[in-house]
Image 1 (tube, helix red, strand yellow):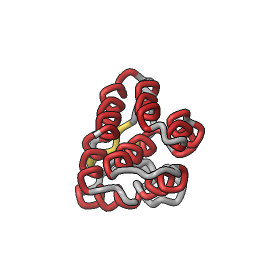
Image 2 (tube, rainbow, N blue to C red; image 1 turned 90 degrees about the vertical axis):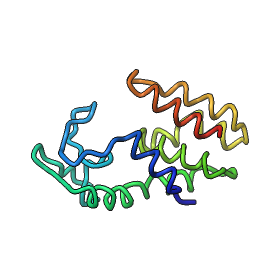
Image 3 (cartoon, rainbow, N blue to C red; image 1 turned 45 degrees about the vertical axis):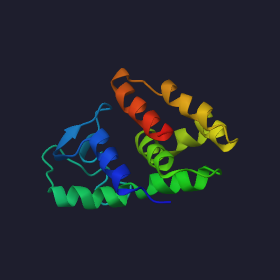
Length: 143
């Protein structure tokens, strides 16, 4: 599956889309839609004065989100609706594939316990500022 247009729009709203570099909550220079590696070569290349256009940001996002789509497609072994897939891609884009791979959410989901998996969004709310994002992802997953 691929992230739907609606899912992409929602994820971008959750992440934010900034044309000027900023430090994220971990102190890492970031730009666009959560982009720290503009060339996708494994090098954190965003610097304090880096700027990009909206077009560059969206093009980078389309490339950047592929790893999260791949993680969900590879790790989830049960059928997903479009909304479930989009919510999980948003979640994985934020927490990373290794964390998702080890998660109780994935274990429950792969047993077919969709409701139990949805409840796991409630556990991923640190830092507290992420709570509204998690509740939004949970609502999307359940819709």
